[in-house]
Length: 445
Image 1: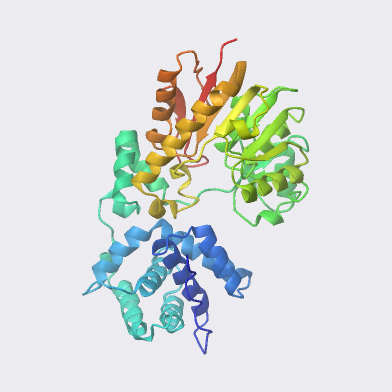
Image 2: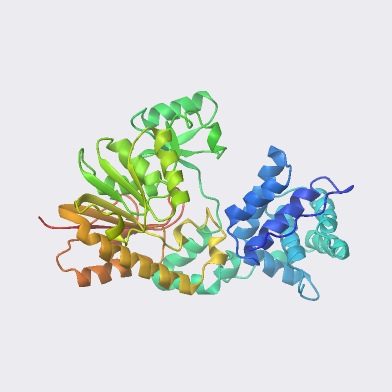
């Protein structure tokens, strides 16, 4: 896929115009070219010499616009006499301006000046007067910006996904839609081999940074204010990692004991593997992933926190290629999924996923369960996990598996957050928790 053209070099543009032009390019790359937000943002950052302040502003704008993309589009329609056609960069720029002015509360004069000037950097000089007029109209007529009652528009979700959530969650769906537009907290996992969560919280406090513990996740700390990962004390030495609290529930569920053979079947980027070994460093863990480049990230993560595992680059379902025939006492399947439970962290998911993706991913999840179940030792435990909040990628997959395997047992997860859902457990996204689904499967002795 071709990269979007680099914006023209700024020439007497208003302060802040280049970063707004870059934001428009990132948004267009996601919405028109189907690129992930991470990739589009990394490309824009590599092509522009922004200082730390502008880099932070760029991130805030593109994440915010994609979180509220549909609502911002609806608001644009209310203020335009004619729809804007065939000008996706200008459309993206207008949404950036609206978001800055009315959501980020940036001073109006700064938004109008910089956003209007950014149009010329996008080689759309004709749009400067349009941008200026529309933003000023939004100042004069703020009543036009009040979104409709429809939660899918108000909270910016595609209709198909909003309908799926209503089907799966009933009355709770509207709250989940609202949470999808919120900003998630930055949550840490403290390496218990180095110190306790309380000790690390005290260390942060001495630096003027506040955090709070979560009783439900003993190694977790939620930062009161997010910051750069590399600035965390002890991060480079493996004292702490960034991992959502919901993901930190996998290791306790697996309940690994010293000396046991453990398979992390879809290991990248390695957070759960690292957590397992921080809790039980004497486990014999095999970290498997089909993507060799992503497996390199697992290796880097494990080295940073000071633990060791056997890393294998292979398709988990091709057992003839990588399995040595010895059963595993524990198997973690952190299965590929739609990621709908982490939309507040990755707002591009709302716009890049399709109904067909969910069906294909559910099929992959079924294949992983069917293929890896025979590798589990008698008395062994398997944990199936997805960061999806769709039953098609959780309850339905496990129910189908249990129908085909009456010998399998499904003990209750009984997690400290969330609620039972079929044979597993689901966690709604919101507050300190990302959306997740867990199921425990065990083989009788």
